[in-house]
Length: 442
Image 1 (tube, rainbow, N blue to C red):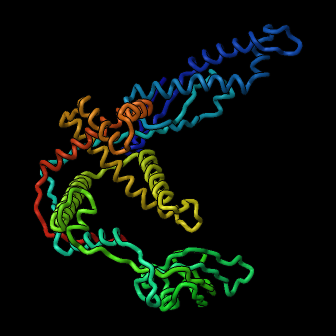
Image 2 (spheres, rainbow, N blue to C red):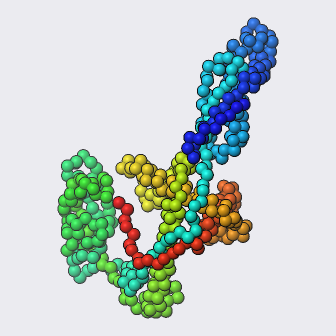
Image 3 (cartoon, helix red, strand yellow):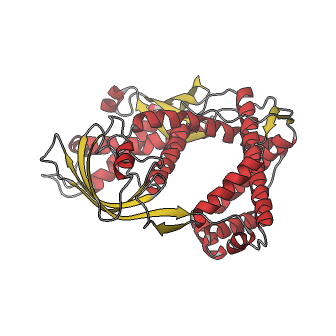
């Protein structure tokens, strides 16, 4: 067998393989003999038909079996011989199909496309310049969090001494008819709570339900904009008849020691509650700062190392990201099969991120190799314990599931890469910079 390696790109190689006529003839003769012994050919006793007759009668079957025997072995031997770190299944193409008509008289030549891991050459990975920005925590932030806690503790009290006003919650039963489409089934919803003037509430609801009392009825028309968040209503006119069943106001607790103690958490006063809120906000700010710093260091690492990434790995990571997006949508009550969703555009965006994911992993793995980073069994055990605690599952159950799916190896791999990133952070040249709000995408 003769082989020739052709560099198509850092991640794509071609192997030209030539299988000698003698090797082809040997396989052809052996398989033909096997067919002759088992063949049932009219006019001949079973197993006694001439080989030439058998070859004619079972031409395509013998040919297929010869190729099934010769080609995979030749491809595998060539990949091993050339020490190619192949990814996935090779793409095999038979070049001289005319040789199939005269087995053993001329060599079989084939071209094999192989995707491989590129050679990753580490340039600068220590001393990367990065900035640490920490979100400041002020009295306004603490007061806002306290206000959120007050809202969460609020009691809804019936309003009996006045009509509804802004900020009240009006509960209604509503019927809606599509003005321009009378044949469409009408809207029927009961016990809908409308916060007058609240975020996301159509202005028409606020205007028409302000000044009402229980048992009042109001009729009004809403022309929904074309870009309305609910697709069934977007661009349509709906005439509503609403029956008011309740009017309530939110009664917020006073920020005092009694309320602080009612929240639990060993708060003995409003001041201790505020101190804990500030501490939690500062811890969250530090965690955010650490996360952003790691992302900044990874970005600098990627900028310093440009290399081609295997498409199969990018596709695999893109699929993984797509599955995560779909899962998050389902958790938020959104049907990922909706025709309004632009999955093609989303996939292209995720593909860019997926390529960076793969490049980052390859670089961290190279750093692991260069720095001889290892992970102990105790560290893997600690990670399993952490997963069990976070998922509220027994440790042995988590270990059993991980062992079945090869997850322990995955955990060790993840821990090694985490250590590599920690090494980058420890050796980075980090400067403190003023906080700036992240820019919104788009």
